[in-house]
Length: 282
Image 1: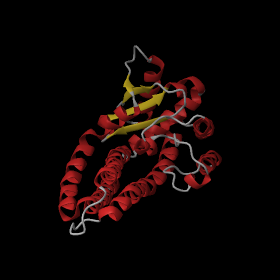
Image 2: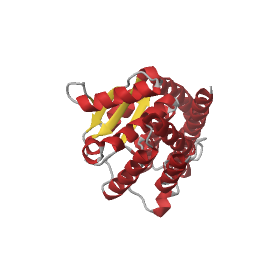
Image 3: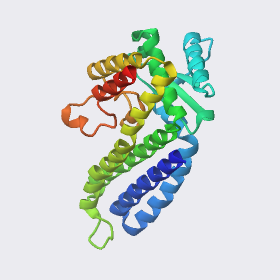
């Protein structure tokens, strides 16, 4: 029930951002159009957000014949967690990272980069996969998938505002929209609002998935050491990802300094490791 409430709140918040963006771009008619578009996006995001997230990440589904060890590890951990075995995908990027997606445990998928499989030790890889299965077990993968899809759409609307300013120069004074000022606000505030909504939800999700993943794999410090390595690699070699999908990954795949970290959808790695260390000492 908690997951359904969170999903409903997310949809409502992002729908509100859509409507405000529509009003800024097109006045009353734009707001009505944005509401219709948002309703359609919510329906689409519920049923197809996992497909969109996997496509945006460039993930490719692999069979047991192609990645037997990976499939065996996912199957073992899923059995331990009492979950159906999710579909397995690989992203051909050297930077180690991973995410899970899907609307429920029966329609879930786990995606890992080739770098993750090459860099981590066996127990560390188990820890990362257990974390992703933790998202599935906690039933919060729908939230992250919807957030990625909707945030991407909002970013697209911001791009539309930018091109409208370049070629249209803003609307006339008798338009009930925001004109040039509205377009400027749309360009900067709508993506920021979508990011803040994602951040509020994503940070708590990661802590919960860490704890659940530690219980699934039975080795909290294996996950902790994996997180530190992933943090170091992703800082040195940021991934090429759609920013809307960044919050889905186990660690932030995008580069950023201290100021950018204030608005990160991921909690600080040091705090995550500290919490995992506390589990070990219980």
